[in-house]
Length: 94
Image (cartoon, rainbow, N blue to C red):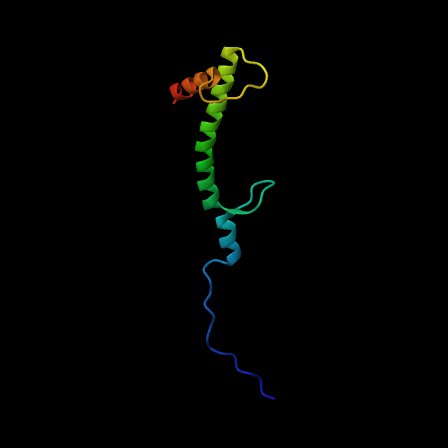
């Protein structure tokens, strides 16, 4: 039986291997799942701006509690002195 001829057609060589592309565009933080660098960057920007507001509101409420001498559980409802003072601090700090 004669040996088969190899085709002269060469497969296109990839400039980068898929493993390389994968490693460039993906990151794995310690103790976390894989995510793309692009999505990770955008979500961290969004969450940092949101969390700063949340933290500042919580800080303002804590400061208001200290100023008013509130101890224990107190609901922060609109119209209460605690809410009003926290809102003043929050809006003044912007």
